[in-house]
Length: 268
Image (cartoon, rainbow, N blue to C red; front, side, top):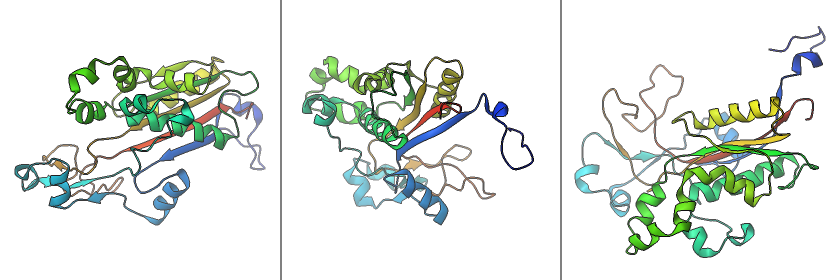
């Protein structure tokens, strides 16, 4: 931690290697933006949804599964995952439809994060802007495209491959928003977004870029399904996630997208 000069002010030399968060944006279950998310946290709002048998059946879950005594019909649902302003980002309707929503929403979220930081996407006065991010496996590809009547044709389409491969997450954002710093897609299981943030901070401190965007995107499809509880496993036995609590029993699946904009402290 930076030391204090006695008056509650950190000395500048102690902040030489500090990184500042200058903007952020996100979409979460039960919260369409960061302000709503923090309000839910403050007020103790649980954003996990529980589903009826009819809802589960409509998503294709078989009665043999959802009637199992260990089936937990709960998930944190992200509203509006299927909405995207394709023309704003100069995508054709077809290309947008073939693209994983994780990639669509992350592009929108980075735009909003840069606006929150006070920068128009595309430039910071000639400086280099890096992008460090990761996404979950494309369940959109598995459930929506692979299950399509024209699946063989669609899966062979080059745009389908580009739109659903996580390898292109960061580079697509850099290209569409005209960001000319490093663009690195990061994958490290459950720590992907944290590692992306670390990589972004390192890049700033090593002067590889002058501003950096870091974040992650995870959208599980279908949305309204649950999980089979297994004793000793990672998933919750009752659909409630009690983080940092003595009665914690496991986690609950869900979706969300977030990005932060970073600068070196001296530059911020």
